[in-house]
Length: 266
Image 1: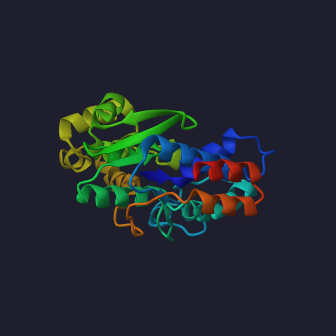
Image 2 (image 1 turned 60 degrees about the horizontal axis):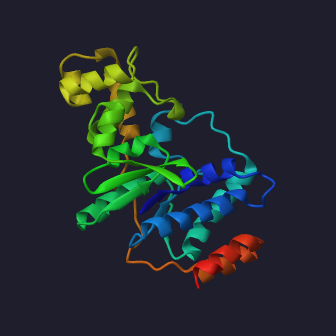
Image 3 (image 1 turned 90 degrees about the horizontal axis):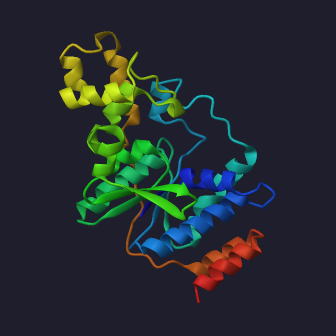
């Protein structure tokens, strides 16, 4: 199971009252425990952004993710959460220049290469590009009590394109959350139509489409494509260390969460 740590942490932060001490830590840890109990994966990898260091995406396109401002309390908790993940006995992946998405892409490539199957847990629809016969996207609808399972058929139903065409689709349609403008005058339906006709962005450009925007569109697609070369930690079979995690969060002053984790270890 490959988890988008930042995605789940932000969901937890906004779902729980800020009056709860370390609310993102509490909500995220509960979500991760629930996911493990429901799915029983052989291993869990949680990928994280490194917010202090720009990636090649930020350097290549100045407007990328511009305007995002995070409260100090969530930043403090994001710095703490990889240690919580490791206390649980799971793997955390974080490195300068990479985003959480990249580690998830690397985990999918690694596990599929071993003949295994992957569950990718994220709210980020960009990661629909990872869906395959061996990889299913679990998209939280309400907390993690309700999850949409997205495979290739669901990607085709929602976007009208194949999973492998999702970066091309994003380049053409744009992505407001990342500040990617897309091609002028092209919405989701038209983007899907173009890819059904041409197959790829390069083929559309070779056919004479978007000549004035070609360089920008290729950059947008590169930005939207996960970098599966991101460095992964070792991912042997894992057994959750609920008691160790209980001790760790108790030291953070989270007694109720510690009790819940301790109960899982009995």
